[in-house]
Image (cartoon, rainbow, N blue to C red; front, top):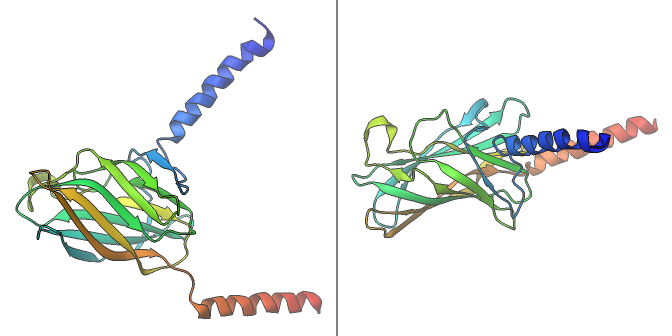
Length: 219
């Protein structure tokens, strides 16, 4: 065996291992991408800056709570967006997919939080071609049990979208796609937090600062 071949096999094995390992940690979710997720990198480390609970009346009359969390990332200082769903009805519901919108032009990663309470968890995440919508799908388990069920099984795990956005506002949406015990589709939607562009005043201050720097360099 040549010296090159002798060293090539271990290098390829290490490269393959690194590729497999990276799929269990953070993923950069570009427009058009679809990845499997495992809850290994939930983006929940930081300061909670918003955490309202929004009640959604679904198409079949049942109700769900959407916990609309915004976290200031402990490392980057940017905003991460979390969603948790809780069934308020007396009958179980089953999650098909959850669309979280408002990410056009922003970088995103995504995963669910394996330290959060709840039962239903997504095993796959996708971003549409336009980059606006991050979809959590392939839920297993998918059930949101009847309200008040033991073990917090009436709720989902927290789903997080990590971004490079420095600010936020209620400019996004969360669309819910479920089915009931008969298999009939059930839908709902609610306005939720998403990345926001800086206010014009902030942009003006930035422009003044840049102009000041340029003047100082010329003097």
